[in-house]
Amino acid sequence: MTAYEKLQRALKRRPRKWLVTGAAGFIGSHLIETLLRLNQRVVGLDNFATGYAANLNNVRANVTAAQSRAFRFIEGDITNAKDCQRACRGVELVLHQAALGSVPRSFADPLGTHAPNTTGFLNVLQAARKAKAQRVVYASSSSVYGDIKSSPKVELITGTLLSPYAVSKMVNELYAQVFSSGYGQELVGLRYFNVFGARQDPAGTYAAVIPRWTQELFCGKQTEIYGDGKTSRDFCYVANVVQVNLLAATAKAAAGNVYNVAVGTRTTLNELHRQLRKLTGSKAKPVYQEFRAGDVRHSLASICAATRDLGYAPTHTLEQGLALTVPWFVL
Image 1 (cartoon, rainbow, N blue to C red):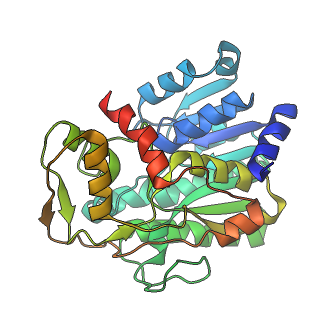
Image 2: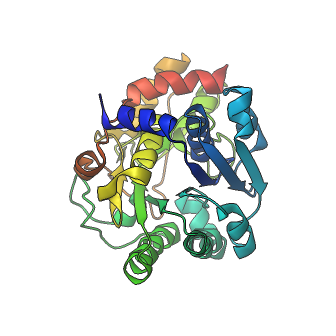
Image 3: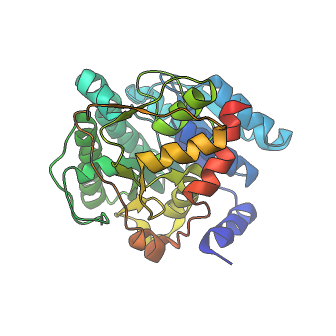
């Protein structure tokens, strides 16, 4: 039995009360669904800036009526300290997902990125501390590795940051270090590497590549690759991310640390495009554009630390995740 399977059994025996920020978002809604299926009590906080009520409706449709009643949603903003305090009241464990993602977005509006990603993060830490929550698990990002050339990326070595978004996530990690040492607060950072799955938004200027390409290929639209297509990423299916969040919230060895969240395999954008063409039945070739400012050339994670400390064992490869994800966008 894996560490995650043991944890799921333990949570069913002793339910906890959780807060998930970014509740109506892609990752947040998957966390809530899994927690409710495990008969946990869950509070969700979201301002619908990038999340959707439809995601929460989808969650409710996938759980029992009793499980749905264990979920309380608060429409609020993490940049509002009072909203954070209200959401944290009586909560034992916090999974902080709320943020404004996207490197290009952060260049277009650095202040707009700073407010939720930095000030909002600080509000959540303060509210959780005052509410005496046992632990906060927060979403960091692989962008904190910046221009470092070594591969795979290991948690102790980072480079020069390349975007305002990366800066906001590194500031999160620095605040977490100070709150951990100064207040004794239990905090765990998770550096996400290119997460994908159902409910990820395919629309808009800053949409992630997998949902955007899937929808464009299915609709017969032109797809664009920035650069020569040899840029590579460590794509991670959302079920793996849910697993790490729950393990990080409960593993004794996790407190005070940051962990890579990935699968540990590298895929080029050209190869990803080929796989999506096959799954969608499209024969369309990509159109290559100039490299974008702030984009990292190659990104591959070492997951040794998460495996050692948390018992993390990815359940889905890229191929397995795509097989589950593509039908959601095209059906």
